[in-house]
Image (tube, rainbow, N blue to C red; front, side, top):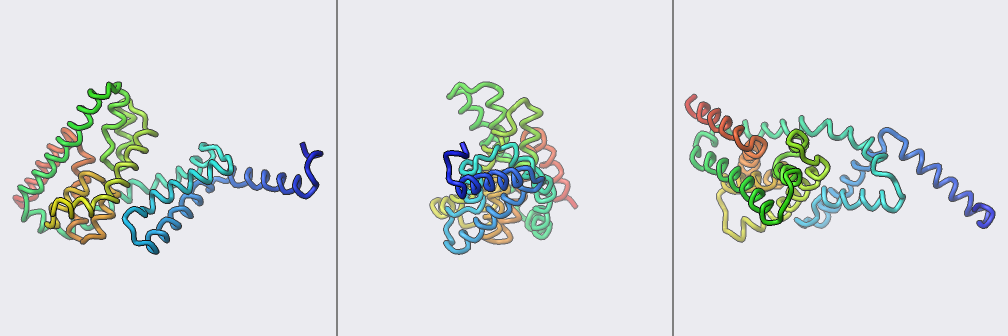
Length: 253
């Protein structure tokens, strides 16, 4: 092969191949690529100020492009990107900070908040169940999509324990969150939802942590209510009942 190529071109190909191997064999290649692409997404969002310019969406598209263009195996990327997953759980827990700051607000609107919790669980689980029947999905596919509206850190574990496909669950969670973050403000304007509590509950219930980041841009109350909705989404079913009881005990104190 090298005999048919000029010496300069052949040398360049060898150097490019060697560089590719060095990058892909690095333990932090995936993490570094993810951070660089996400920072680029933040820069685009800051410059354009468009809702559609979601940093996570831009970063995802850039990462896919890099892997395809340079023919990098996904496993090589994932080996380094897995380090970022360690931050998912503490990042999710940190969402309780704005919730704590708005603790008095939780006591002021118990009926609205509890109603939003119950309605969110019923709507999410019910819609997935009905659509699974309509499209003839298998049990594995059904439980894969069931955690689509909860945070990635918890959704992966829920999907795996129920016999789903965690990789597809992550994709469903990302699509749900990105779509919700992009459309949240427009939907609130369309349906004339102006109450901060209602906005936060709706955004958090539909778009989990990614939606919460958008809710925090709208205001601290919206962010706190959206964080509360994540507790709802991450505790579907029986967990929601336990949450409601804990919340009622909080109101009594």
